[in-house]
Length: 428
Picture 1: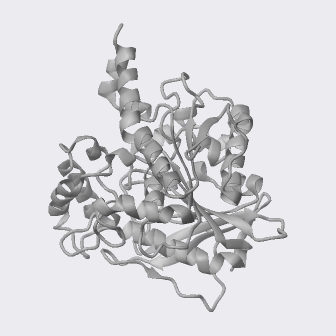
Picture 2: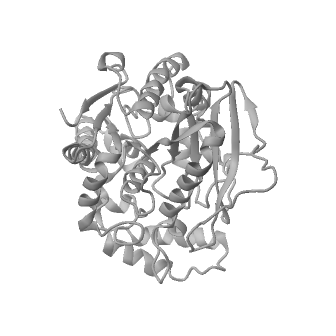
Picture 3: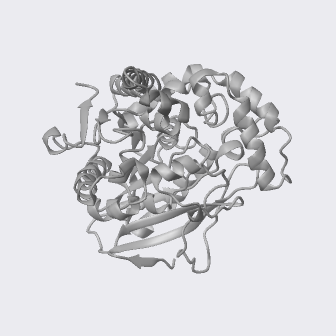
């Protein structure tokens, strides 16, 4: 393995963990008999660009380099040797299962690896109709199967990097958190990880999706193995349009589907989570004002917010209600069920930035503290006006909390973190 040094860290980037023929399960990459050069960032899965979200996160279009035929991951660890194998943290990026990539500068895992003395692995996986739709005889959960393939690769190879394959923590945001939750009950993922940090997963819109998925699959049926990728992405836009009219779940039409390998039927999922509880520690939570992000990005809702007298109260009530329905209620229920099933579960609420700027403590607001460095987020609208010193100080505390949980499954005393995050233990 030929990697590279980066300011106190060792990197092995752009490692191919599987090949990905269109509409087929991933094929694990076999061991290499020649040195592998791991010195370039992982390419992204094919996706349509989302200009508004890129602006909110400070992401440039040039940062997306796409590859359909292979799947990649990147590894970051401290340069200095460790006396014992290091805990492993696996980053699953969000993006509504249609956009995003693990190796963006704003998602840089170097500070987390160095400060937490952990190994961090960022994983890319198939998105949109190529990863999470299926139909017409095609597998429905290819993106989830990709993640299981990556976990197999990590389990087999991470000891060579000084990592502990028996101490692996998934941490994912939004769709990435939803994926982490469903990997807990996915056939083939058993024993490949021991903890899950589920950040802002939209669990409240995960049920009753069969009719919507069927309509989407009908529109996507014209896509074949030979359809040019640009045309596939244009059709994906039409597939998303076909999903409208199914309520809040239309906001994230692509997602893992129950009743399709490797997931159980929807009615059997709660029992599967109960069976998994004793083997997996869980930290799950939300920001205080999750849906404020989407309010700001919506021109119509932004105009309503600026309306005299009732604009602020109405949109504030809308954010509170949708945050509770889509995110907070089901996160708390998930933790309670986990704790009652002999699992260890903690719930957090992320309050930082509440009351400041148009975003407040909105969806994605923990990411500038958890990943990247303050200068990485310089162009991000969500933290515009926040001093770099504040990002650094609060980020150090949040990264320590995440790394401590990954190391032991326990949390620090509340007094050390209460300015950044509030939490409670689900079985107390």
